[in-house]
Image 1 (cartoon, rainbow, N blue to C red):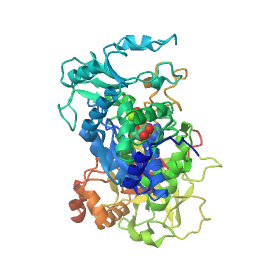
Image 2 (cartoon, protein in one colour):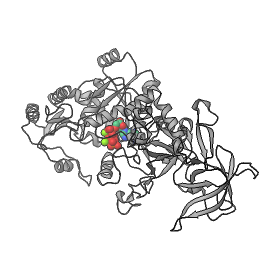
Image 3 (cartoon, rainbow, N blue to C red):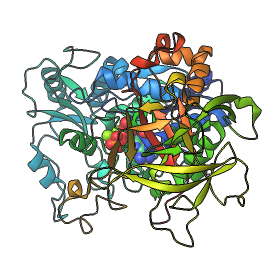
Image 4 (tube, rainbow, N blue to C red):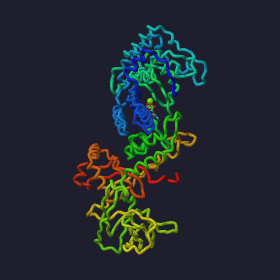
Length: 581
Ligand code: ATP
Ligand code: MG
Ligand code: MG
């Protein structure tokens, strides 16, 4: 059996079972000091998943005992993110719900002679613990002060009669233990900070080590699942539950998840933002869950990714490519296909009449009728992507070049470039091509995407901005200082964001948005301006989603007022893995 089987007093077990009726109860315990990240997606799947597998329940508990770092914005974002991932907490609790209970147990612990008020400073405590040289450990002079004195001092701490740092409550554990978590860990410290829920009611706050196990116990958590850095805390977790005589959940550890080419620590994310390397904590280059969501990554892909990794006990740095592959698999199923040109090149079909007009019926997802169809104009002037044209031909090149043909998707005919028209500066203004309507030529090897120039039908749809993302860091592990001489911030890739202006797309883009807005769920999301679910596969290019900077309302769509829309798109992922990386 993994984990230990702590010995628990029979009456505590009885009360615990009466409360749980024997079912599994887990909790996801984030601190509301930042957005959740991809690592938390693992923690969420582990906790909710374990409970679900065993027919139990999982709570959300905000671990809010550090008032200086915690904010309501993060509280709100965390619950929204958990729901976005597809989980609903059975109950929502806060460590601060228990501040009074925790205080009472701290008093009880002190009364039992198992805690004392200490006035040592950080350096003194470090020296007591053997210092950097791991020398001999010794007790501080306050350790054996009378119980009544500690109780009185603890009251003084609570009443605000000490400045921050002048007194702490320490647990009287075992300073000679091999486990440093047993070296009289701090239980309470003084902080004159306003708490996001309890305001200025308290000036002493319990530490994580004091709070976590007791809150687990109050909530009758059966399995306290946590990451492996808490392995050494298991002993102190059990020690405290036993010392204050409360029910003792089982603690099991699992490995932290990290992803290559990114960093997850909240402090580092703030540094990136404050130094202007990213725009915000939900900048789509980051791996916070709000960032991944904003980028257009489906929650399903994230869950599939973390589930595939399983619940190993070792920490793992997983190649970001594996997440990308899950995203592709998922988007391949759900994203409609349309044609777009990120760098449009104008093409004039010389053998078509000025007012030539055909309607071409296209399917949002070939071989899947449920996605529906749309029609686009086919006219004398159209746009292709400039990457599909080359002036210098070669034998292994199958797209457009002077006197060379290429197929057009959806019309299954070829065009042949007959002339390159130049601007005064020598750059290419447009291509003149012949449209091989009779298909007399051999079947083209490649079919490229195109967008008609037909303003009266709203074609092309102009994309104000496409944001193309590359990994934020150049190295797999940007933290590794041996790899990065100038420190991790110097490892940021200046080309991690490339903004492309002037891209064009087919009118099918509007058809899809209209059909999305016509559903009840879609309309609701649009009313909240959650536009990231509007995703496309731009054929032969990649997967894209609307960014929240897009200017577009559900009413605009209803009234077909696309003129006022400003479309900003994020590239979620390319179609294929880049072989160079
Ligand atoms: P960070 O400093 O990265 O924010 P944290 O552990 O301080 O991490 P918490 O808000 O306390 O963040 O985390 C809530 C829960 O999620 C904890 O149980 C924690 O162990 C778990 N968790 C945090 N980061 C990861 C990770 N990278 N992989 C798996 N679980 C994680
Ligand atoms: Mg934490
Ligand atoms: Mg943290």
